[in-house]
Image: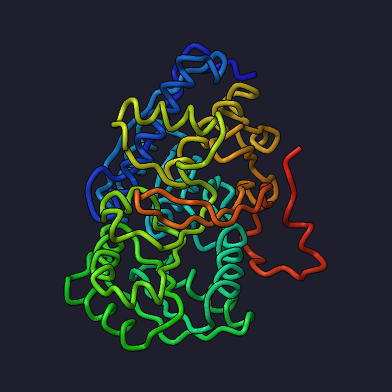
Length: 381
């Protein structure tokens, strides 16, 4: 056990945007981390250690993330919970690595990355893209249209999804990118092109306010919307709340968590979160990952102190709202349970596919050979 900081709070950085183009999601992540810290401190989950949050608002700007990470580390912070966009994570990681600090990153991402100074709590491609490609090829036709925001994750995620769909006999008609803060004309051009090409489905990696505008404009095209549903990895309840249920109804998202999941752990989480932020406050997979990663950290802290977090994380399990989660020692990514949800008229997700057990994260091999699939899928002990 640690002996130096036993009577002092452990300062942790909370690096999520309260303002800017991705704040619609990041505000929920910030609130989830705050809720987890309050619960952990109140219930002694971290043992003799108390967590002290240091909040920052990087305003959805990668340069601001880097500057705020520098400031946190200069203040002596060794552990940071934060970042949504991959561009933000990539801006922060070199700073964290130089300082020997640790970033907990709670957002799905494009994979093909490892940092000894990062714990990845969001889905890797083999925990979402693979399942969505299977579902799309089985339930829709083979003609797909891709649209994404103009930054790292959409380009890489679309590359992966193109490979997966092509291997299943599908065709990608077009692949387009729009600004993170798109104009009405930018969005209208995309919707018009979809209406003209008439794909069987649209794969969207548009994020934040851009996703809200895309779905709202798309909803005006009744025939196109009915013919070509939008499939996403990123559109969750916060975006649906922002765009309105009318705009989101009938579209699909693949994620480990939806707030509509049954179970006592999820009910406790949803009730606790909404008791603070409103009876209908939206939560998404990104919100839930931000929450459970603090509990994993706190248990590792309790077991071995602040100097042995990475050694203890792989032996820690937590009954998260989505189900049991654990960090994989070899990749520092997290076992998660893939699901696909369809937005209903009330703006919540009906689960249409549930993998049933946690999938071992594999950020590099998104399409394992069938004979080796059992290596990547398994329930937690």
